[in-house]
Length: 294
Image (cartoon, rainbow, N blue to C red):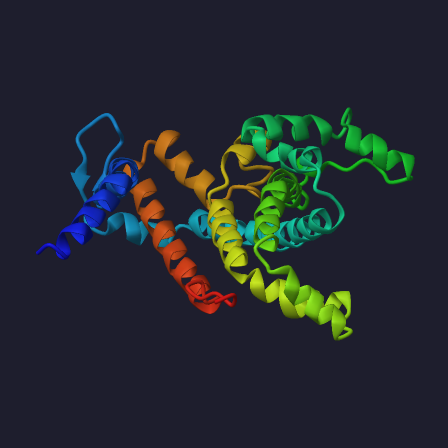
């Protein structure tokens, strides 16, 4: 018993440390998620009592073209956003790791992420204005005709992806920079003595040892991108011609514009399950629980 007591104390202390986070998770994530599952089986307009309808909301969702269009646009947005954001963030991290230790440079790179989504959306809404925006003025200097950007169905989603790449690229760079600084320097020194080129050291040492950071960046970036709402609400409101009505925007429209809480909850539960399966698959493929440094 005497040998067990310290272990029990350590276990109790551990639970006490995680208790605030655990309570927050249960109150603000687990309970609302369980409540959403229950609401998804009802017809509820927020004003009257919910009416149990079984799987009717899920059956309606399967036949809803707007739901599938929202899922397609969300997936397309992720494909436009994540690869370029990850590559640019990695490039910035490597450049900062090799060229500078300046806190000013790091703060400048991170600055867009410190701004609110609404403020960033407003800034770019003005900059991309077809008539008065500075972006079209700069394009005119090199002979390119004015572009509609957010007003063009073919350019709107690309423009929103570019806005969010600009905002999140600094955070991705700082995460990669933290990962780069955990890689032992003697690995590079040994490779250099054997005549390895910079590119060979990058592909054989840097990239493999950055895999845990890469997993974190990809999982959080993809799930965050599927939840994009505020940038679209400020800049396009789902238009033009539904070209930016991604799935989360469509869910919130159903909940608070059309007062179809049951149907919105059914789509939310479905999106959550899709993201859960995708995240588990991604973590399995990238071997998230393993480290090449061990």
